[in-house]
Amino acid sequence: MSPPDAGAGPAQEPEPDLARRADRALVAAARHSGGRTAAVLGCSVAAAVAALAEPAVLGHTLDLLLRRDPSGPAWTLLCAAVIGAEVALDAVAVRLTGEVDGRSTARLRRLGLAGLLGTAPHHAARHAPGETAARLTAHATEAGKVPAAVAQALAALLPPLGAVAALFLIDLWTALAFLLGLPLLVVLLRAFTRDTLTSVARYQQVQLATAGRLVEALAGARTIAAAGTADRERARILARLPELGTEGRRMWQVYGGTTARSTALMPMLLYAVLAVGGIRLAAGAIGVGELLAALRYAGLAAGVGAVTGALAAVARGRAAARRTAALVALPPLGHGRAELPEGGPGTLELRGVRVVRGGSAVLDDISLVIPGGSTVAVVGRSGAGKTVFAAVAGRLADPDAGQVLLDGVPLRELTAEALRREVGHAFDRPVLLGDTVGGAIGFGAGPDPGPQAVRAAARAAGADPFVRRLPDGYATRLADAPLSGGEVQRLGLARAFCHAGRLLVLDDATSSLDTVTAREVERALAREIRPGTRIVIAHRLSSAVRADLVVWLEDGRMRAAGTHAELWAGEPAYRAVFAADEAQSDESPAPPRKQEAGR
Image (cartoon, rainbow, N blue to C red; front, top):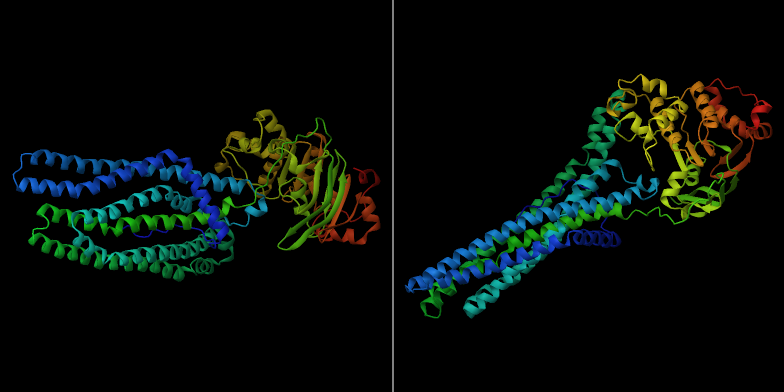
């Protein structure tokens, strides 16, 4: 019986719907390796049949040899063949089990990753990076063992059941002597399976929380070092270690208790069979070979170790599958089959948009038409809903009510290819993907833009000068490129510019740039990038000044929309939105010049 092995893992309450989804994911993984899983079952069953045949063949061969029967040598060869077949089939089953485990794990990881990448970012963000890594690695590995473990568990039932039947064929009284202890074996198996599932789930839950805290600390290592709070963080990470130890000891107690009880029970059953069989042998009812076969069949029938080990693997895998299934269960951001009209200007329309987060509306009743080709600055105090507005406008999230249309087509009806080809994003803290700096700029849907387009986008984002100073220029590996926060942000802008479509959403994408560079980027955006509609989440006064339209949000509602000049002149509260920014910048608090107001 193998010990309970609860790998590093995530925590999720074993809710019925999640358990059903986990089981469906396991069925999908089993179908993915259906042929190999069937082969594992076939080889395991064949090995079990050989194991069942072995005592009978050995017993009969022994009787033949004791009687000096001429057929004894032939039966001896048959014994060797049966034993060899059992060993060979077990070896093949082990080899196939490894393949099934690997393929099933890969399938579960793909399902989990597809769920994670196919949902809205705010849903994915509910799972901390450490938890997500655990769900896709250790827990997917444990869950991937279930299909083969189920096949092995089914095959493991055959020797005990077949052995009981063989005992009845050999001698009724020896079979009855064994059956007296059989109910205890059944109770032992049920208790072990139930307690193992519970203890492993608790252990994985605590382990997942600890892993999440560790990843958080690693991500904030510089802040922790600068604040001198390393001891405090260490204590926070290890705070649940005693609980982890308690749950780990509980797992081993379940395993050890079952082992102890089965270790005590099986010899008693064997001794009972031996005693009754000896009496029957003395009475001449059975022979020596039949007594040997009866003892070996009693050992097979009491084979709680093989059955319990297989059931334990299934129980551990199902518990782990529930954690991986939490990613599969994320609501998908589905796509339709519609395409955008050719040559559309990028007119964006929001109709009664409402977005709810945590039971509260963060956007409420937003209705707005943004003319194609215009630049729109979305302004408001912190928490006004600007970032959610940007996410809904570019369909990184769907509204809970209302519609968002681009050139008359609802965004949710667009194909994924059309959406990501024509709608681009740049963020305040972009993540650079790719091997090299040039690859990070060109990273995106569609064909490779080519080196010239990459350099043009970098020039527009103000990134070309510092990229050229890198050791290998655009071919410099990202891991070897010492980049500041502002430089990373410029590369993120360059990536968005490189794939600019008819709608470009800049979510505070110039916040780390100095005023001069930010203005250069704004000019390049207006003159050098493919014409289209721009939505700029604005904190700088200059961004609002240069916009064609300003959308002013307050507490999730659109308080006003108009040109910057109109709002500045008529709304003192609008001017107050930029007060903090003005105090930290060189922007003039005076109203913009008339020739700038309409831009």
